[in-house]
Image (cartoon, rainbow over all chains, first blue to last red; front, side):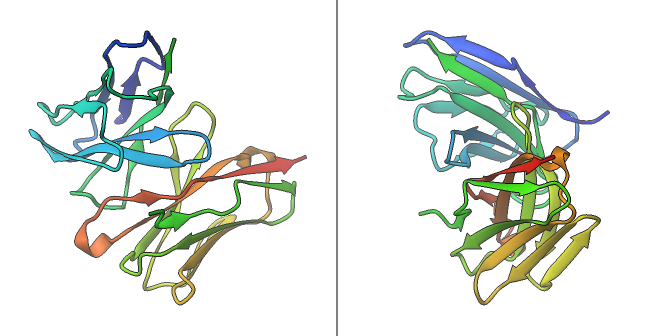
Length: 114
Length: 113
């Protein structure tokens, strides 16, 4: 079964630490995205990548970094510079370059700073 | 600048009745609109979409209406079922230019048995 896998489902981080969230897809999709969900604020785009070895900042990229070394993988690092990292993080992929059609989402990672 | 807005954070309806979820947008270049459904601790799943060349699209119990002049779309669920209880996100894109999706804030729908 093709799909998009995020791990871990729950993650706890101490203040001042960097942490990396994993996102892997086997759908052969070109584009991948990272969103953050906070209560009452919907889904806000952190970073996106349309092809391997290329990525662009979204609306709230400060304090985050990404890489896209393989088509299947788009890990997100939450750095210590991110002021309020506690949130639900969602990874998505789509067939075309930035197309609005056919976004497939992972099941999310809940990050909590302790 | 919130280009896609869902002004109702929550909606509660009785089982069997109609649920109407609303969405407004400001960017006149948007030409493709989608609704996603999200359960707690899960990723959103695609529900239904509509292109700007249409004003209505129907799929079973779900119908999306688009009013381009008012920059407004709505999702109708008839009849509503308890399993429909979820957060519903409206999203839009400039499909012809290949832009990414812009999401609204979401509306929590609760269908009471």
